[in-house]
Length: 407
Image (cartoon, rainbow, N blue to C red):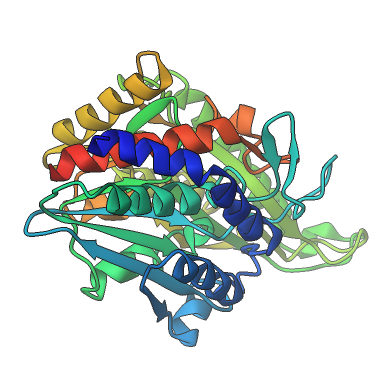
């Protein structure tokens, strides 16, 4: 039996074990927030060790976790060197958004119905813990004569921005890969994605009795002026569309607002948060400057009103860097071969941890287990799910792509 056939047979023989591993990961909550994810990392390390891997556990300092809105996080690294040559990193995140309402399946049940596993994180992206671990194991078991190394990076703060996950690993010098593949879906090879800016806006005035509102300075009225300007600005964004397939155009949303004291009191303080999505062709810094100018220009003419704007989070867009063409071509060719249809290179309108690798100059694509879209996967909403057929197919694709990259 040849190397590729040995690898395929090993993957087939271990399908049930791979599904069982994913089920274990889904059943253990790792919601972020609140972001107490070290227990999940400890269990994942046990499962990976049982596969024969040596697992490095890099615990993020507690103070740094809290600075990034989390309680605990431990990043896992597995390294396997076949020989001299380039290093390929495979990254997936184990933290997930909270389940929310509307589930018809237990969000931590890992139920399998009609070939789909249901549960929070089943698709985004606990599935790719299993995809990448079993792809590497199959490659090792195949005995392929390869030149290079594979690293698995399993991190726990993607939902908080990835600063203490992949970025921390890179900044600490714990890894320096030549290529990276990050969690994604099977029917596309993603080479670009949007960026995201979160701003927190606080508008302050002076409270007063509602019987004499003129004796105060109405923070809500000022906030209304700011919001009117923001929504007018949003309408203007509709005319811009990225030339990259799948990206779409810039987006803007006000997702959280609070303020006021009581019905019969002039509001002295209103806060709201803005989410601005930038296409790869935009400058994140310019987008932030534009919003700050817009908001301040709306409220400054009002007597007794002050505004404070803070950057809560900035995720730069993912842009192609380095030898991305070779990496994308290899993954596309192997995915097309295994899935039996042409798999395209596209962009996506969300943001991911992959940007941290690209920012470090590492050619990066997104590819992993999952259906055709985040809508079909119910990602970040009730009844999240992953088709188990694609868990196995994506694992086969990644193993073959690694063999090509290191062959």
